Amino acid sequence: MKRRALSMVLPLDILIVPKPLLGKYTFEINGVCDLCAKKEMK
Image 1 (tube, one colour):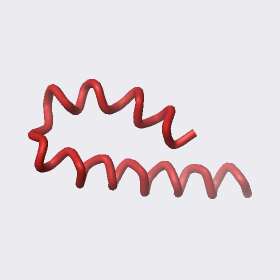
Image 2: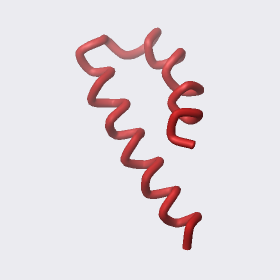
Image 3: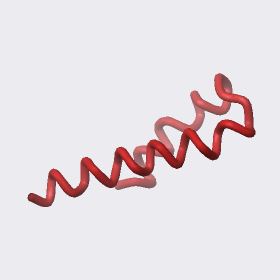
Image 4: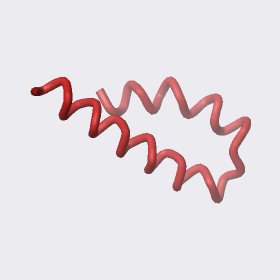
């Protein structure tokens, strides 16, 4: 699930976000996905 969300987001972000920021930004996306997954499991 997390991988699918990243695969949709990353292609756009690579064009917009400088590489040094990309790692931080994808980390934040991972955190959001984790929260969504926990809410769905409940």
